[in-house]
Length: 401
Image 1 (spheres, rainbow, N blue to C red):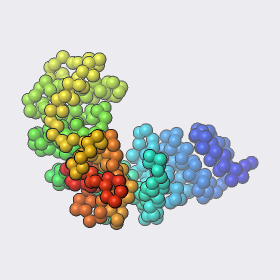
Image 2 (image 1 turned 90 degrees about the vertical axis):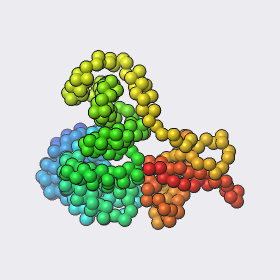
Image 3 (image 1 turned 90 degrees about the horizontal axis):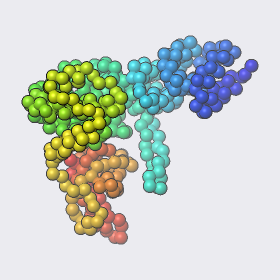
Image 4 (image 1 turned 180 degrees about the vertical axis):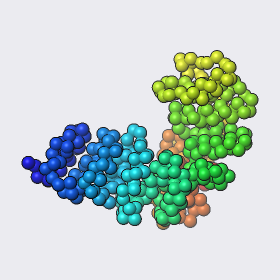
């Protein structure tokens, strides 16, 4: 008969070898040797068992295990378990929502740990979000994904009021969830205004897509088309923009551009077929109603090329990216902030990427647009000549809205 320590060590070792199904079998075969409360009070067994159940997608059993053994989750392990859900290929947000309710958020740690990460051979400190901030991020996301919009709105608002400092642009994501919850609750006008504010801080294609959808619903098709085209031209794999392609097709249909509308519907369908994703019936109906002969899958590269050329005609003239071969200083260049190393009362420090090169920058805390500087922000910057034998200096001149 194994001792409780030996029992927990065996479970831990099986998990370490990723033999999660064997973990569950070993537990089932040996659990009767111990009282349920003995198991429930052993935080090591609890952590390893819940980990194995997450890894094997036995989500319902997690809550049965907790109930049968009167488990009180350890606050220090809770954050690690929560992140395991997000590491799954497909997140079950209903389970995440229920799991978040197993612990009082007020008991979670507010300390932000710092780790060292290696960048180009040099170790740099990086501050992580606290367990409490992570709980708000997961819980509000779960509420939104499970269509509990009123609760999502209220909790996202509370999150913004709770923390003075955020990580991973969480303040932007909370603001976005507030806006989208308002949309689903019937307040499209406020949702649109707030999404436009979010977009100034985080120019992501899916936010542009959301703005375009509201304009379309309001019958403002020119504005909807503008933001939809900006979204399709923005960073992001085309395969994940199949819904955006349908939106563009809808708008073009409203604008009586039937052939272009058909081609966008068709591209959405072919991309789904290529990825072996389900094609919605509504997409097939839209293609049939337009009456053009459907394009075979082998013509996908040609269709993609044709429409990319069409989208490119709407791109605005941009300042050329920085080219190291150009030696003249005090010129304006366009780039994107790709990393933030520090974000505190002393300002922000990080790297701007332009034309494949990364440029170190620092911003004084008094900089007028410091709140808008985050990963993904596009900026206009200049390279100042070196002073006192130091390296070139990068100075951010403008945030691109």
